[in-house]
Length: 74
Image 1: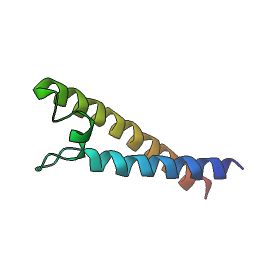
Image 2 (image 1 turned 60 degrees about the vertical axis):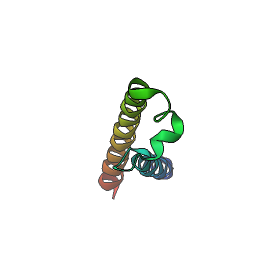
Image 3 (image 1 turned 30 degrees about the horizontal axis):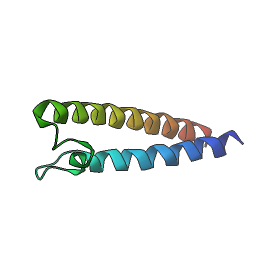
């Protein structure tokens, strides 16, 4: 039962990680402009990118932890 819950969490974290990575600003602007990155000037863009970095790190950490739990259970 606990394995199913960890697998579901793992799938959620992996989906969020892919989404957040795709939203990062690349050479062409990125998808973060959709959420105010290109409209608020330099300060608004920096805040959006900083929050996006935090969300990416948090989802990556959750992905790592659930991955380690799943590996340990096998």
